[in-house]
Length: 252
Image (cartoon, rainbow, N blue to C red; front, side, top):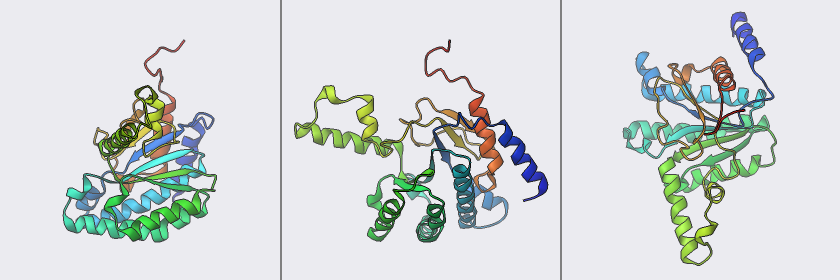
């Protein structure tokens, strides 16, 4: 990192109100394939660079005191991609579970996975469970990784669970509230998303945390995920802090 980069990051930090950070930030890691294509590289190279960016941004998020960050790593729709790309992603994800996340765990991060795990191998599921259990006592950043996650799938699974409880007589209609629904989602225990970040130039949520993002501030940028920097995260936070959040009401 050059002196200019260090100075710019320091200047941006000076603009951040660290007493008013978003409690929960969602990040859609988009643009890996386009990043690779522009350089004449295979798509898996873009995913490899995206994994490095994930590590850098995760560490920085913890350093600046964010409470929770949820990264969209692999969606329920990503299985539709070419078999070769999906296989490369699975290898990358499993390798990161074995190696990359250990470093973040050592930095006091609590690591949690959301999504339908049943599509993964038993060994992969066990690795996820082991990482969660090994970091559950950490007190730093709550790092959530969405794997085989889709908001519609999440809500469908939750609705099935509600129906099963009702069929057993364990749940009455009046027991169903916004709070009880939130408690049955994959993100149970987490605050709603305050800030949703999507790089790559796309302007949509792509089936990510739709219930949790009902009142999220959306921040879009043209930078591709492998090129996303600490400064970009700071810019998004500064923009968030300059917005007037009314939650459907009016500020006095």
